[in-house]
Amino acid sequence: MHICSDIVLFKPQAFITGTTMHAVDFHIIIPTTPPPDTYINDRLRSFDHGKIVAINPGDTVLCTKEHATKQYLSLLIKPELVNKIAEEMGFSEGIRFLKLQNPYSRELMQAINNFDKETKRPDKFKLMQDCLGVQIVALLLRELKTNLRQYPANSPDGNTYIALAIEYIHAFFSSNISIEDICREINVSSFHFIRTFKKEIGISPHRYLLNLRIKKAEELIRMGQYSIAEVAMMCGFVSLSHFSSTFKGITGLSPREFRRQKHTLPNSVMMSKELQNSFNKYNIRR
Image 1: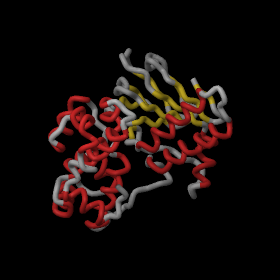
Image 2 (image 1 turned 90 degrees about the vertical axis):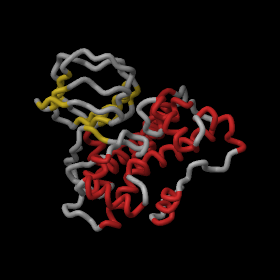
Image 3 (image 1 turned 90 degrees about the horizontal axis):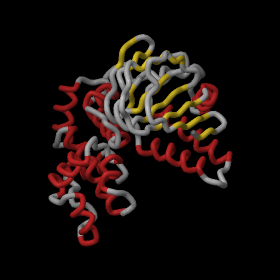
Image 4 (image 1 turned 180 degrees about the vertical axis):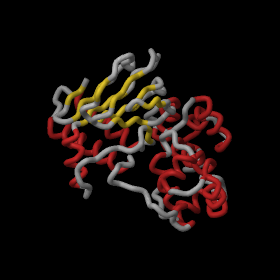
């Protein structure tokens, strides 16, 4: 357990079952495996793989059964801190997260990991912890839908919502996002979105997401700082086998072969024409 002024970071080994808990703080859970079916405010909810869970102050939580899991991350954040930062970002008080399950960016996970590392240091510095805590909360407010951050009521035009979709994909490619997640974000039907995206970009949204994940995986493998399994997880793949087969299908090499040959390969084996065009058209940083 790591404690900052307004944030506590736990690393539990199991979910508490059989006891109804009343949340006092914001409770952000980053599970390594899907949590057990749980009653949230007396409504039974099931969970997806690769999403963070946001519990609001005042919510009641009851896990239904024992559930084998791996160590996961659990953040408790004081409402006062969330509301203070929300006000600085132009929101008013009374923030609530509207979605129980949410995609998350690499930036958010990096901020949490940095907070974790700082609290473990023998020369840890309170101001540094506080600054990292502010960064974590600001990213949560940016990325998660709240009662004070509404999506457009009307569907934007085709070019606009394709740009919004691409922005969303690039922000959350490392999370377990789906076409439904993207369509909810941009407020269009999945049928219309898939057809328009393919017409505009040249490939399906799913293929675009896979291409982007493999491009990012190439970059991480070239860095040489992470294992193949870590790269797979950081790029949003649920399993190592799926990552390996997708990587080879796109690049022609397995991840391990790519690692061995990285110094003799061009900067990107798989930068497709469609991905390149979207980077240029929508001013996306590589």
